[in-house]
Length: 598
Image (cartoon, rainbow, N blue to C red; front, side, top):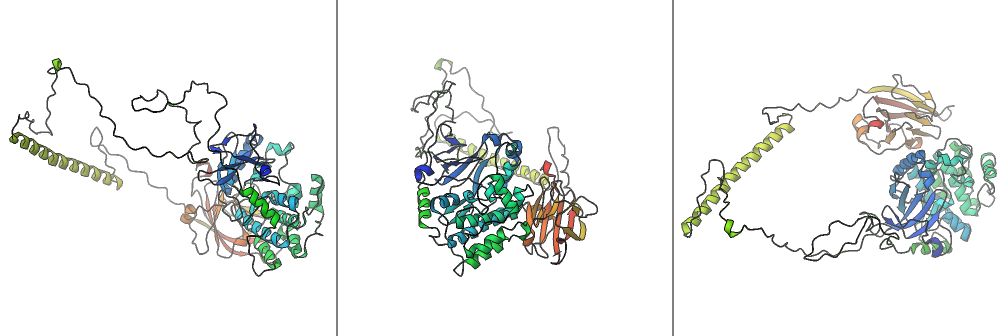
């Protein structure tokens, strides 16, 4: 989810200067150059306070005006921030609620696969194998976060010196249901869509596998597997015809052919894809050397690594402020502070955003001058004389100071010592009693001394008792069916896509579809319980069945406040006409606050 796209060529084309239509800052990030533009928005180069380059994608204003886009965009950004893979560009910051949504990712100094193929031709077989293996690892962590990319294509794959980076995951989903998709704005690239996507059917993780096969064919031949032309013609061939793989090298044929299966269920899993790359590799193991890319492509990486330096200060305003602002004058020792402080917004971005401001050495501390206290005139010095008060209740009034003599000084010193000992002891007793009262209240005594005397506060209400578990043994949940945890008789019902609490999707994964619903796959050997499901926060929207084995447990958290614990007991036999998973289900109803009240 990044969008670091730019055209081929030298640094002047990679790092385009800002124009009058471009902002100079985004939420405090000072922009250094424009990296590119696309159907979703523009991408700019900026820097973190520590000097690390970042790519900031600013979404088009038309999408920001669509509330459904904003809702989906916020959801996808939250999921994308959990994606921490070696072959993805991590999302480090975002604003989904501002006037114009944006997100920032780590800047990847490398051309996109599309730019590299257009400029230098197809990649050699060894580079394609390393490319696809890295992309498969990226899809593994993306799918693990509950995200389907939906727009995996050569321009969304960046070629870095240490491997590929998959970017822009999730944005297509955010834009898919907006009003703009029906008014001439195309989301997704027809040449790299899957048949179910082109036909308007449900998109699953297997959709990304089909696109991965198309990317492999493109990288190895320089042309899309289903040809080029009008979008309608390309989509028809994807749905109804076979791909043209005549130019694909023999070592890549099995990998590409299996990924481009029309049936989503016939496509290989990610571990199988990596195994196919390993089998087709000339070496005994897949290793990524520093020169894994051809020399001309590596030279493009060098060009993009020479990013322009960050702007040290934002440009001065072109229009004078209309509020009577005057610059703050230099501070002088005898000058009074200005009547009104200057507005801080134009001085520097908020802390933690953009390049760090210029360093200012600390100033040495100076003891402030003593404040002169006005003294009454001598003529009126006798008009007021404060009456000395006893040092503590019952203490004798201090005597007037004796003029001269050592005895008066010793007496004054002795009185001061007596006050210190007696007063300090009284303060200690008072503090000790106060701590004792607080301790009694913390232990449930509930004692409280009010102004009226003797009042007592009511004890804290007791915590709500845990709900009783309801066990359902041996449920066969068939693919395409769902469960509703609030049902007294927990029986699978037909349907896999309708906001259900738990469904077994035909894409071969368990899905939490209800608003606020989530799943947690517990670790092997971890004992599932109500407390474990309440405390674990490794949330995801779906769990693929190939990650499950007998005895594995999955927590189900519904948006309606129910908790469920699934224990896998088995799977359907190979010769079974239906695909199902056998589960023991324990349900705790109303165990947490519903999603609307969290």
